[in-house]
Length: 266
Image (cartoon, rainbow, N blue to C red):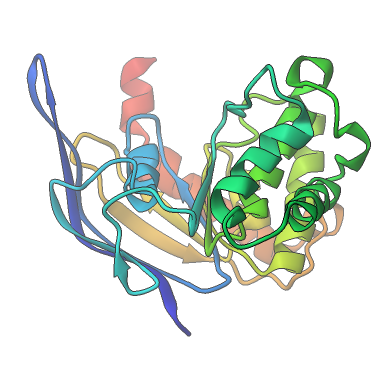
């Protein structure tokens, strides 16, 4: 398999008013084409920092990051990001929010008709074909996130990067969008790296779960392969012994081996 993403000995040190803050150390990670990876760990463990490095939004203090054999030194359309905050432009319709991204990536190569078709197809893929002309304030939080995902997918990225995209949603909406994401990734064969705090979300969605140690100077503590067949259905998995065992291993890592931070805060 091709390694679409390679992170080699990456370090991240931020300069703050209080001095240097060592966020990440000795990060080595590869992600294969079509693989779904989740990054999980306690708050402050550098999950989002690592995602931002892969996105090219931040440059590492040392180390090398590659995407499709090319060094990551800036954001690029081959790496689309979906944030927890949908980041939609409030004055544009759902259609126009997606079309803006499509135009930036494909505007010089495709006709207006093709760009319109690409935009509508992306919104249809996430179940938002009925709300093309609605503005963000006219749709629910879950629908806003669907548009954000559509915008990312419309760019046909090689890698989809997601930073807790469902973290601000209610439990039922979150579960519904997780199920939709499973179907979308199955259809598009996307390579995904996703930050989450949710153990069940990580096990349900992932091929591998990357567990981060506590910060500062956080690193990868353990990587768990989730050996569950696809397609996955949450109700069927609830009592699947493999699902239960994966969930137990992640909980053991977070709350037994890396649990002292939470106890100290409490």
